[in-house]
Image (cartoon, rainbow, N blue to C red; front, side, top):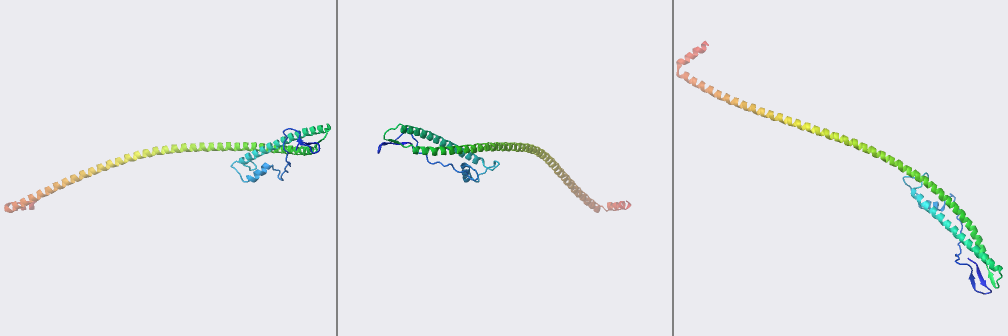
Length: 268
């Protein structure tokens, strides 16, 4: 690269210009793929073919994939922009060197041969390649802008889905809280009813226990009365037997009383 001069036949070689860039490598704009996808999209398709998420865009791409693709597109645009800037600087430098060399050639300096042919060839190639890079840069920027618009739309859809999901959660929460309040009220009522039932049951048990105790006491009193009556009956029977025995002995010892008793009995 650059313009090389030789001072006379077999003279010392030297290069004009300051801070020259190294020769630019050949740059061939990549041909568009059949499905018109950018290199970034092709890379996405190769590395993330099955990535999906709960909320997806219309074409099914995942949010993470879109973020990665946006980064690749931005890098692609930045790379092409830098490439175009480097080419433009190189073209300006070569034009300056070519003008300087042509000026030196017209001055007719003796013994100095200026080689401007190589600089002219490189300049022509760079101009053609620079235009190709500019075209591809415009195409990459268009892809990036379209991608950004689609991603913005998808993000809005995603946010809308989140809001809808939030409303559903709020409804579910309200329903759950209402159900919990209703259930708590039912539990409180059941506890109160159980407490009242337990009180009534305890009261009934105490009444039954009192009645049972009274019945037992009454039975014991009746049994005691029966025992007393039985004892009195036994005493009376014994007294009667004793008196009958004494009467029999008296009648046996006094015959006149016995006949009187017999007459009285017969008359009776």
